Amino acid sequence: MSNLESSVWRTAYVAAILETKDALMSDRISDARAAINERLSSQFEITPHEHEALDAAVQKLATLNVQHVEFIEPTATTGDTVPPGEGREP
Image (cartoon, rainbow, N blue to C red):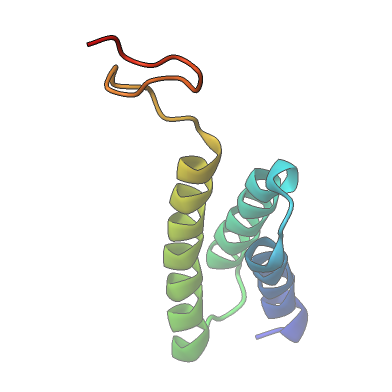
């Protein structure tokens, strides 16, 4: 196994995990997923330890993506809230 092959996906994964800017988060996650998929389809041997790390990274990126989407997408109002300054009349 080439350390370079392993370091490419790991670098992309760490960049996604550590990204704090919402505008860049989706791109970082996509880049990391692409790097992981490239590593999985690589002709170089993947050790059991690296394969376990790849699987864990895929799961964590999926979780991170769901959390990011839930954070940035507005929720629909259900009609039971009152905008500020507008009181309900009895």
